[in-house]
Length: 307
Image (cartoon, rainbow, N blue to C red; front, side, top):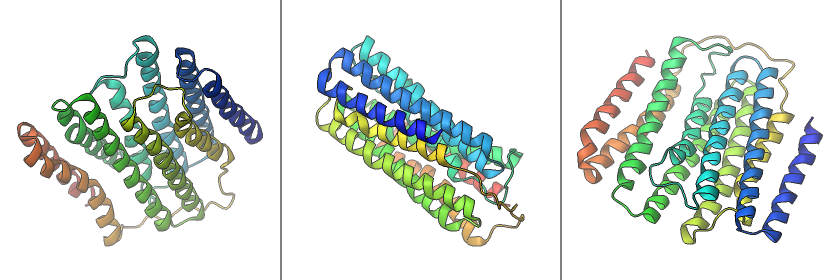
């Protein structure tokens, strides 16, 4: 399976090269470039869902969440292709397509914050509440740092702001995944988060370069920079296809979290809404009440989940 996927990955990259050299940014070239990206995303999602079926406990939930995040990205890219090919324009500021692109970070954050003390495939009420907290945090990051300010900016400035927001989220996820790998109490979980940190780092760098070029000069799909999204997706597919559960997997004993672990978890979740609240007091007066209230809500929920 891995060898077939590797051969298919080389074929997709070669197809990208041929499309760039022969079709360029023409409508046909943009269509082919988008289809190759969506195909790469589909392969990654399929490989991760297959890995989840091989896994058990925390690993199964991890692969499902990361796979869902990439699936959302694929749906968003379908919307981008519709705007680019059919409507001949980029998705407007604040459109659902742009929101979906940012939504994958929610699923990645859920995967990063999985509790290593609960090595089970099922979700309990506490885990569900933790997931809701994280979703609320990232929603208000989107609202406070992009959606509301974007309505007071021109399209290009709003796009630059969106790129900085998403890059900041990606960098934070890289660091958190690395921290989880260091904190891991089993070799399998450590290997899982090391791989995730490497994927997130590759995605952040490659997509960041491609996005930066877009901020300088708007170019449609059909350039070499398209590989900035395709290559990490194919890497994720190969990573998931090559992953195998450890034969000597030992269940973890339940224990109370240490103070430093509680501090890390709660600080990571509280930082984003508090930053949004502080920023709103200076830049978005009309939204101040709503965002500040939401920050207090998430902070209270954090304290409750730590008891």
